[in-house]
Image 1 (tube, rainbow, N blue to C red):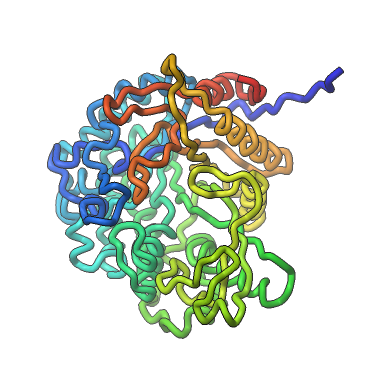
Image 2: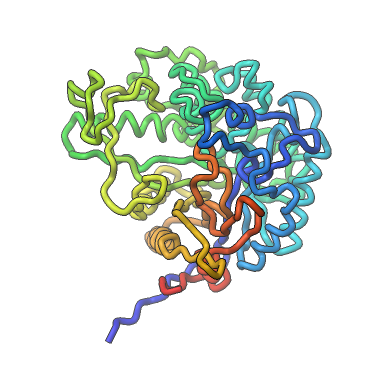
Length: 476
């Protein structure tokens, strides 16, 4: 006889959502007055994305948003996190808003509300107007002020109907993948520029938060979504622990230090001293970045495992995984740190499935920011999903992934964490940045030839969890 297992039940007000971003789903890149973003330019540059694929059409959400909202409602979701395309609303990053651009988001929000779905709006998910990049991009201070201006425009237009706001999504990726390793737009490889970009993203968050609050009802919530890393070391030896601390500073402290505490970690300055003296941090910047938040968004996929580099590895020799130390690392000042593949099952991204990391992350921020409500604003997995002969898409691996990670959230709630919601990444298959359309994260399958949407079995499983407020069994 099998033992009975208590149901994994969530609070009645818990938000069950899905997340997307504008460039990954909207398409219509030349409609409604929209001008190019850095991702338009990057994806149209040969060799930057897999198979040269772009977001020109993506999954055509711009024209099909009503169909997509109806699908969310059918599944039972009660929240939807989306991003606004900056160049659709303010094409050059300067000047007045384009009402045609704002009208699209007004229609989207109205459609969501009509279906009982709470909108969660992200202002910046990596699509900087190309004209601002041409003027220097995030390494230039002026962009933070341009972001605040843009935030006020969107807040004034939608603040009466959208209560949940997120300033930036994963500023680490914007700064370090965009300006250090160059694997994301705008594709630059300049370690100092990446650190300048990180600081100006912090400043933009603070200025944008203040701008939003100046134009919106006080009931609205302002947050930021950080891809805070869970950094583990291969041993407890002093050198390995020091390596872990340097990565933690560059993954976490560089953003949550200013945003949550009004200061950068001193150890971050020490680690990057050979590169910069941080003189671009001006008086008043940290106070401006340190605006009180109403919530904190956490994006989690997999933990990091690091060690101190051996002498051979520092010289560029082969690591245990066969790779040398990259000259263009997204981790400035950490040439003496080696990343290792964590053991266990992997997704199509090569990321290890480890739900304990999500529990660890929630626990960390519960202690570090006591009293601040938390949301899991992204969590999900890419698998090689394919329709069967009957056109159905069965993805038991994703169901197991969701069950395990939502169970980790539940454990954190039982431990006293104030987690208010979970947004799976992603609502549907879409343009996955430099991977093009080669990685499917969606709970809804998209046939890229016809753009037909087909809910996978994970979408039905997750929808049942949302409707019932508890996790269904793993059996589909």
